[in-house]
Amino acid sequence: MSSDDLIALASDALRGLLQSALPAGVPVVAGAPEDTGAGLWLPLLRIPEPAEWRQAPGAGEDPAARRRDLHLRMDYLVAGAADEALQAHALLGAALHVITDQPVLDRNHLAPLLSQPHRLTATPASELVLRWRLLDLSLAEQATLWIASAAAQRAGLFVQGDVVWRRRPGEWPGEQPGSPVLERHDRMPLQG
Image (cartoon, rainbow, N blue to C red):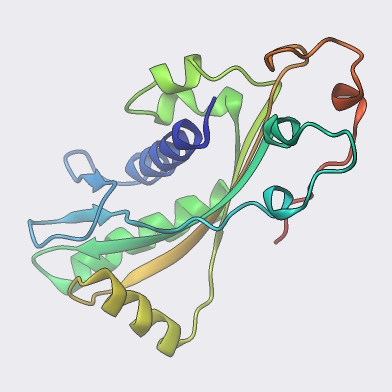
């Protein structure tokens, strides 16, 4: 598992979660907003480097062992578009409802949401959890993000995803059950 697979899996899960709340035939596109009819657009805005990757490894610690578990945070914009503004607002209302009703998804609930389920079946994990929350940004912060996206400003929600993926013991190359790396229990808690 690499972080690019995990990012794609999480983005697809959020896309599918949003799609599950919309009427049939209304698309959710994982990408920049376009003016092509009714739907929701889901551009990924930012992925900060995980804090544990910035820390120097301890004496004798294998730096690669820190990447055995991945804790990623991703910030998304959910933008609604439609021929009529109120229809776009209704789509955002559905998105808001489903994100607040289902803020936590674990591995057992992901498959029905995915357009590319092979990413989940190819993801070995003893734990895989996605947590979504709405971001409350100031108008200045929102305007800055819209300008940076080079898209026409419209109604939108800002969503943050926290993803925790932990590998099953013994799946890291060269790892043996009972090794010091597997015995560590210092997990990064999710903030929020």
